[in-house]
Length: 304
Ligand SMILES: NC(=O)C1=CN([C@@H]2O[C@H](COP(=O)(O)OP(=O)(O)OC[C@H]3O[C@@H](n4cnc5c(N)ncnc54)[C@H](O)[C@@H]3O)[C@@H](O)[C@H]2O)C=CC1
Ligand SMILES: CC(=O)[C@H](N)C(=O)O
Image (cartoon, rainbow, N blue to C red):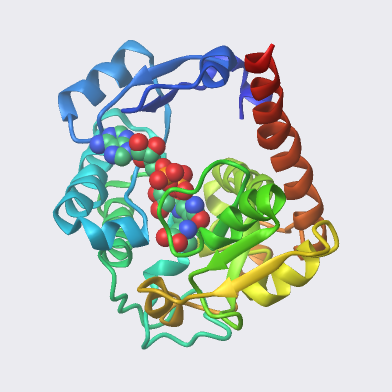
């Protein structure tokens, strides 16, 4: 986004201390999604016109702290949506495959179908979808929402059910081993981060008249842990993976296996670029160069 709109025109915010890399990249400010007045101040002082609301507790951590998930994921959405209405902002809120549940068709899962999720994360995302649509119809708010599958990047994962597909790269490339908390045949929809961010930007830029709905499924691929291990073994030939399913298995078992994003493809021409093979190629390179080599370099420096 910064490469297209200019570094100073995209402000990143969170409640955590930013890394040096984040600070070097462009403006970063503290913003607590639960502090409505603080958010108002930011919108006014920085003349914000688009709001992209990423803050949330993901599926696995949400189950461990339901009251906090309710506050951040539900109260937080109330705040940003009201803010967007007051200041006439275009607003994007991501939803997820987790907004579906065991009663939804899983292969494929269409854009409009039964949504009865069994996690607080999923419930909060259905709530976000519905309140966003309501504000669109009632107040003309330019609310846009994409339901993402598991998003894969080299950043440390945030406590979701699809985290294994990130963690496995870090652990396999360091130690040649990984213990997976899902069964080997657990199929879930996934997407590489570059596709995810491009989908978001293309969707935000699409003229309103082109959108037949405000909430779209998007995806790129679907795979299982054993299929990912098979591809990764090309880079880590003696890779040893064991499977110890935990509470995240039942969450994954209630989620879509294959996501139908044909509406996004026909309405605003969504097209993914990364499939499983080039996802693995890029992830191996990224984790190796930006994490493992850096750690090794730091260790080396310390030894000197
Ligand atoms: N990572 C994935 O696979 C997917 C993510 N999404 C959605 O994308 C969004 C971002 O996900 P990730 O980056 O993976 O999650 P993450 O857990 O890495 O990031 C969430 C951020 O929210 C921040 N946060 C928590 N409480 C806050 C508060 N009170 N005020 C301000 N910020 C607060 C956290 O500090 C954290 O940096 C979420 O809304 C998630 O539901 C949707 C589908 C898939
Ligand atoms: C798919 C998601 O929304 C997220 N990665 C999670 O697993 O909770």
